[in-house]
Image (cartoon, rainbow, N blue to C red; front, side):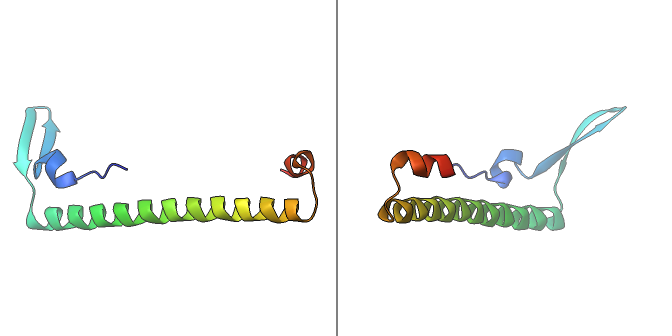
Length: 81
């Protein structure tokens, strides 16, 4: 799983495209702080998404095992899905 590091990717600068040209400007302290917050939020959201997917896989496996334990055949279990 690859983690993006916004501070390294953008080198703490932003590009401004105007009719006069493209300018590279340093980020303000507030912008840097917001990028750090955004990065932490993105990591937390990704971890939550992965955990939810894993829980779903485990629940599905558990349900399939219980159906088989009740005596359903593989074909019957597949037909339910």
